[in-house]
Image 1: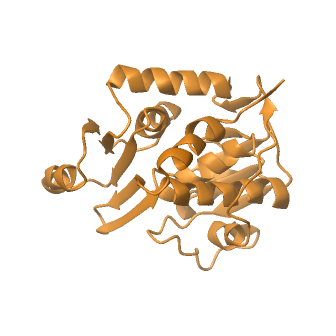
Image 2 (image 1 turned 60 degrees about the horizontal axis):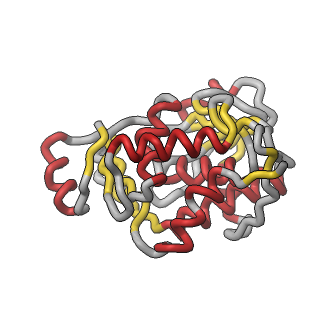
Length: 237
């Protein structure tokens, strides 16, 4: 039995219903950077990543994709791209293909392919990479920003050993528990260190479907202003 992916069920309906509205806004208070993505733009990056994984690296349903990245708009695009391709995200661990921050390349181990992600506000390339390490931005940009999913067997694990249905059910339950509703804007300072952080800081809000405003390296003195400026309605610390 073929099932819909996490991206099909979580992101695609948002794109179809309210694609142009802000959906993932990223701040870095350490550098004073800000980047806002609509659901359409996030979906385009996810499509590019899904095509990269499937067409360039030959990955498919159940194949492990390592993600050694912090909370960032590029990370969100990579996650939804991997899920669209039916892959299993191994968050905080290496996989057959591993996406990593430049300072975590050593953690990628014996991955077949390692892509360094610059985590720049505008997605700039990582310069002067060592041999055998590809730059994510350079590789992903050439791929189409539309993706045709092939689906995956319903029991294929996609996150922490769980299949898509379990991931979606947990995301929806967490959204309900937090009281999120469509149109809410959730400001989060929760770093993405664990799978639980992914649920609280990304998946649960989008399941509402709400928008995410993530603040990296938060400056406590400016959070109240951001909450007001971004018209936030809820907070994840």
